[in-house]
Structures are given as structure tokens and as C-alpha cells.
Length: 261
Ligand code: 13P
Picture (cartoon, rainbow, N blue to C red):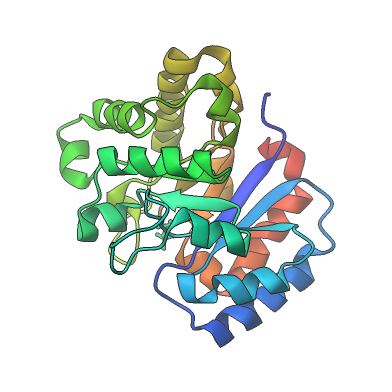
């Protein structure tokens, strides 16, 4: 087993004001203190909360991510946030290509590729989201779509840069209120495929890239996804926004850590 850590994180999307975020943060810092295992925990709040939350996360045990980032360092790009702005705050991860950004804001793989390079240039960890939509799944072209997304998003990324890359498989049909939770066997099959696409691109270095699953993960189904050795973590929305259910998931993972590796 190449990866000895389990990555668990949450994307807050457009939820939680600054004060709500701070009280959430306080709670998770309290209950994670007693964890005994290397759980790589990360939170991805909205931009407006990043600076203040970074101050509260002073010991660095919880990684902080940004939900997006422009590829240019500065310029006339109204409404965008640059790598330099995030660097000064001390952000660790940059989430790129989330399906909601692809669906509602027309992000494409080529733009994501530019952002991946910008993130690497500034020593961030790009967390690259890939996933097929329902129509593509029904046409049985999920594997081709995923290979294409990975090849374009990682175009020009060198093997030496691979240790900073994290991939999240987030099937669009499984995400959010209207999503249908994916079967664990399906996720397992897709993660094996993602690993083999990466191995074809990078050889054995690809074995160390954390592959996370996201889409309607909850307290009842999370453990089933972690059973495959190519699922190295979970990327959770709704079930992690409530600290009680997030605590239940995290405590279980800490208690049964080796069985999920
Ligand atoms: P849900 O867990 O709410 O389906 O969202 C998952 C997600 O989009 C994580 O980025």
C-alpha cells in the first residue's frame, strides 16, 4: 500500500457565514485533537472566511483550501481571486474543477489545466475534481470521459510535480440534494480506472496520488467507499457541514483506521 494516510475533507460550497464558520471550526478542532492516526483533514470555506479561519488554524493540523483560483497572478479579472492573494493568507489546497463550477460557470478542462499549473507554480496542492454526468454514464462512456478529463487537466504536469496532486472523483449525478449516492462497487471500479490512467501517464509514481471520492457521502455509506485500496479518502459536502455527522464519520475512521488503508 503506497498511501498511508486517509484524506477527509469538506467543501462548504456557498454555505456558512464567517461567524458560522468560526464556530464550526472550533468544534472540529476540539474533537479532532484526540485522533491517533494520520487523517489528512481539510476544510474548504468560502473566500470571505479564509483569512480569519487561517488565524484560528494556527497549529496546521487541519489543511485549509480555497474553492477556486484564477491562473493569473494579477489583472483585470473582476470577481476573481489570484494565487498571490491566497498565498499571502497561507492556503494549502486549491480545489479546481468542481462539477458545480463546470456546470454553472462553464469551467472546462483547459482552464482547469491552466489553474493546476498556476497552483503548482505557487506551491499549492491542486485538488482536481473529475467526474461524468448522468448522460455520459448512461451512454457508458464514463471511463473515456474520465481519462480525457485527467489527461487535459494534468497536461504538462511533470512526474516530479505529482506528489502535490490530489484527485477527487465526483460523479455529477451523485452530488448534492438531487444526487443519487453511487454504489461502492461502481466507485471502486472507477477509482481502479483512474489509478490505471495515471499509471499509464506517470508510471509507478501514480501509486502515491491520493484519490478521493465525493458525492452524497454520509454516515451510513462512508465506510463502504473506503474499502477499496484505491479510495484514499472522502470529499464530503452536506454530511460534513453538520459537525455531529462529520464527527461520527471522522471518529469511526480514526477508530478503524488500518482497516480502511
Ligand atoms: P455532497 O456530499 O453534498 O453530495 O457534496 C459533495 C461535494 O460536492 C464535495 O465537493
